[in-house]
Image 1: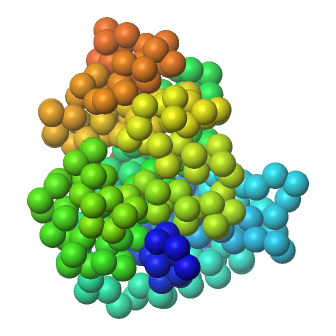
Image 2 (image 1 turned 90 degrees about the vertical axis):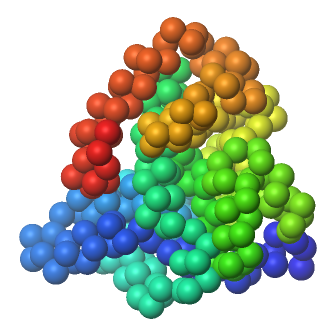
Length: 283
């Protein structure tokens, strides 16, 4: 068992975001329940998106190509199977795990992941890349943090306090303490769960210069910048996207200039406003 498996083997289900879990429970009790609404809610939650993709890409449900986004996975599974997957995931976390709660503000991570997903889709659209796959990759980019929080608990909380929750400093601290980073663990977990390389490779390299993720440089560039934009939208002015290592390479790949960034930020704000009912985020 290698260093990745030490973490991955101990994670059967990832904790869902409380706000999304509440809405899904309400939907389950609605006699007029809507599959599209269920897929929309799942699509905004990293753990549930990973769970339905894992199930839809299993041997029983897998098609010619692996599913790469929540809507495709829900369509492939059908409402009843999706309800089973969601219920299993929610049930496994009905009692909060103390170690995960100590390590990570899951609600804040969920909001950041959803904001990054919308930003990644916006940037991908500018570059004529598929937005649904970009959204999924952006949503899942930090799923490795959930793994560390679930397995390492208080130790990860200490790392986060000292290194901060974003950027290369956290990656370096994780590598020093455990020999792997949240990007590596998350990408390995999602690969094992059947997600395609076009999603997992950009997740693996979302803190790296996009050229490291060939042949998926453009999607990686979009996540690289979107991650910074999401931190900036949440109030971290030090996270300006043009200051990130690899930012210039990413902007060249996406054919963007610094003058384009304010317009893109406003487009992302508008998408966040349209998703207000699901995300409960003020922008």
